Length: 301
Image 1 (cartoon, rainbow, N blue to C red):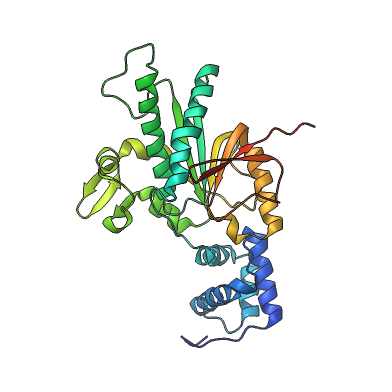
Image 2 (cartoon, rainbow, N blue to C red; image 1 turned 180 degrees about the vertical axis):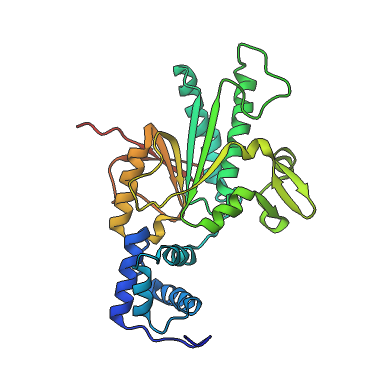
């Protein structure tokens, strides 16, 4: 059994095998800049498994009973940095322009469904933020454009006949469980102002719990973006600060998948340090006040 704290040497061949296995499993590519991070995580898992060599670890991962360990390794490789209302200029652009336009066009078509996918949702702050923004946007929209019938009492978060679904997915089961719980300490609530806290959270001791009504709008699920089986018919996709872990080939494959997953003229939001420039011609970039989004362009056969 490997001794605790002892660094086991990895050969170039072993590293290549494990690097390729991770890439094939989830699309994450560890180039020279990130090799130290991958090596550190591999050392940790080797110690947990009590193995003496990286080749033995590779054999375990590729064996019939190694699926749980492969999932554990992938979880250790994801960096789950997130927060409520992250990148406010982009979210303001989403709520005040994009969402407003989508609601108007859907109402004109008498299409009362809205489906948004948060891909790589981590511990849930992004999809809950989006759900709060949708609730506020619909409330403000109907102050200016009243419905032709009386609003039910008590007033629902989502006015009928609208049906809203925020799908949130991640490859990490641990963060998905935390997201489903929807309870956050004060230190993670910095981006949430008093009005939002009052409307959408219950104070439980020194923590904040997402209220039941908001929670019911968000559906969490496991998805591996490497696969082809991804949620379809989305009006808007958020996939922020995820593509930075992929190489160019995998980035191109992913944004083509998103194109298929979006409804006609749907929108894709990516991280502020990410860009589709040079990767595809199937989206047009739109921006306002430091907020950026990409709109799906219809492809003619």
